[in-house]
Structures are given as C-alpha cells and as structure tokens.
Length: 432
Ligand code: UD1
Image 1 (cartoon, rainbow, N blue to C red):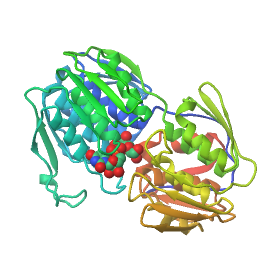
Image 2: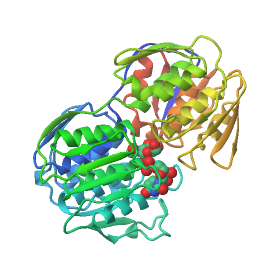
Image 3: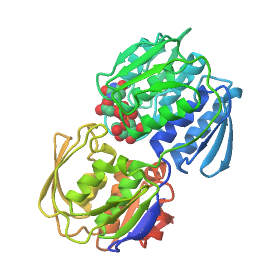
Image 4: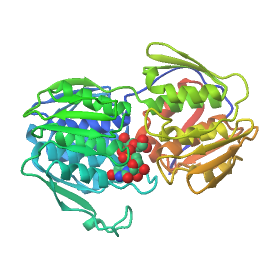
C-alpha cells in the first residue's frame, strides 16, 4: 500500500516550476502518428498518463526514443497495427485519441473503450458523429449495456474505418474537448475543408492545433468556437514544446492560498489562469502576474464565494475539488455548481472526514459552510483532481493526514511530493 503522509499547518513558500500540460501531451503524442517523419516533443510531463501514451505508441510499432525525462522522439514510420493494446488503453481516458489519429493516418482504428477517472457518464457519441460526418464507417461500438468497469471487456471497443475521409461541417451539440480533438486528428489529412462548430476552446486545443500546424497542417480558429481544418496530403517532422499545465499551476496556487503562504509559481501562461486567479482573489488571495510566472500570497482569512464550472474560458471543472477545499475553510456559505460532470463531488465525503461541512444536492450542486480549520484524517483520492484536493486539505489541516489510492494523483502530477517539500511542506510517500 502506497500513501502520502502530510503533517499540515505549514505555510508554503519559495518557488515551484510547473510541468508541461497533461491534457495537451496526451493529445499531441497520438497526433505524432499523423506525421510521415519523426517528431520531437519537448516539455512533456513525467506522469503516468504520458508513460501509458508512449507505451501505446510503442505497442503500435512506433519507435519511441526517450531523449530525457521531458523530451521524446516518435517515429511513426514503423507502425504495424491499427489495434490499440487493451490493457494499456483501459488505464487512461485519453487513449481514445488514438481513434482519431489512427483513422486520420491509416483509415482504420480499433481502440478499447477508455478507463481513467470516473466522473459520471462519459459518452463518445459526438466523437462518433464527427467520424461519420467525415465518411468513416463505424464497424463496432460497445453495446449500450457495456459500461465502464462492468467486466464485459470482450465487446467494449470501438472499430472505425474509412476508405477515404472527406471534409465536412460538424456541429458539436455539447462543447466537448475530446470530440474536438478527435475530429481535428481525423480530419487533418482528409480531403477538403472540415469545420467544427461549437468547438472546445481549451488551451490544449490551441496547443494541439499549433503542433499540427508545425507538422504542416492547415488548422485555423483554434481557441474560438469555430475551427477550420483544410486537409493536407502529408505531414512532416517537427520539434514542438508542450504548453505549461494550467491545472497543475492552479492546484499549487490553491495550495498556497489554503496554507496562507507566499509562492512564485513559475513556467505558466498567466492568461490561461485568469478564471482561477479571479476566483482565488475573490477568496482573499493576492496574485501578481508576471510574463511567465504568478506570485500567490494569502495573509487574511478566506472569504466565501460561488463557483460554476464551465468550458473554457469559464472556471475549469478540473479545479473544482481543489477550490472546494478552500471554500470548506472560508468564512460563510459558498455554492459550487458543477456544469460538466455529474459525479464530481465524491471527494466531499472524504473532506467531511476532515471536518468540512458540505451538503450536495442533485449531484451537481454543493453548499460549503466554512469551518475555522480542517483536522487531519485518513482519506482516499477518489479520482485525479479529488486526490489533489485531498493533498491541499492535508497541507492546510491541523495534524496528520494520510491519503490512500494515490495512483490517481500520480496519473497527472509530476513529482508532487518533491515539489511540495521544496516549498516547505511536510509530506512523505509511505510504501508499506
Ligand atoms: C477533458 C479533460 C478532462 C476535463 C474535461 C472537461 C482530457 C484528457 N480530459 O475530458 O480533464 O474534465 O475535458 O474540461 O483532456 N460529452 C458528450 N458526448 C461526447 C463527449 C462528451 O455528451 O461524445 C459530454 C460529457 O458527458 C461532458 C461534456 O460533454 O458532460 C464535456 O466532456 P469532454 O469535454 O468531452 O471531456 P473529456 O474530453 O472526456
């Protein structure tokens, strides 16, 4: 059993360097398949989800050369199959990006339904709608009765193929990061123009578009809700550096506020942090923006505020649990409305073990009545961001906190123990 032990109550201070963005890296690595030549990707975070993506690429036959812990070279010319390894695919959500990448390159993809965090139903109907609009045939979809984790693995895969992909206009009924990425991947080498309307605008969508364009693609409008992709016949080699992780940065910012610390959060794009910065300031934090860093301080008590999670540029759902911890210690009552996922408040039960007072209505709305302090306890990471929230709660709490199921946290946070220790935290990985 591996777990974290945290002795709380120490104000974080110093400087922390933010790693490359997980959600950009897990889209860019499969995108390298689309090239006809090797690509070099820099600033990839050293996390489990990236390791799994690289293992999937290797299992497909690509030559993967790890230059150092943050740089990799991918040569897709040796690809030998369109089938993604089951055991690997089921360990992460973003394995479904291999659908778009393999379809876009070879016209055929076979991908097991992904695993990852259970945040509620995670349908892929919009991905499929996009592939079909481009002319692909869906050979197999998992039966409706086949839900994640139900053990009916034999049927739980998607197979798509296309003789030829043709550009088309696709309207996304719901703003979906995953569907936007997959349609971009599938259409980048299709014949003609593809237009994605009501596209997601997250920073990692823009990062993926920039990577594709560096390889010679013709993608415009990423970062707005209409993305245009004019298909090109081939893509060439490229060297590309992944953007900093907006959510990792936000998590450290929240940890500083929770412990009333003073930290320089380096290697960030402050513009990507605006919605997070605004809410932390509303709670009483002082945030100073520099070119590629933000200084976060918090001296006084935390103030209550209301949050609604929304697609970018709204407040990110992936920062919801971390800010929930802050609101559980803020003076007064705060409401968080979760606008993306129906199952994102599982962490509340864990937080309650530490003395938080939270009531959840309809699974998507929670009221936090602030308490003066949280108390150390044994808690679980129920998913990746919920795990990060438990770390923040442990850092702020009086006494000792043990966090179990930390494999979730390791999926998305590089070196979290060392980074926090360098900021003065008393946190330790226990391996029993
Ligand atoms: C991505 C992020 C995840 C983040 C989420 C929302 C990655 C690897 N993961 O997940 O961390 O929490 O965006 O910012 O980047 N939907 C449909 N049909 C579909 C697809 C999605 O109805 O075909 C719905 C989902 O149920 C959800 C909403 O659309 O309510 C947003 O989902 P989406 O943006 O697709 O999330 P992911 O790409 O899975």
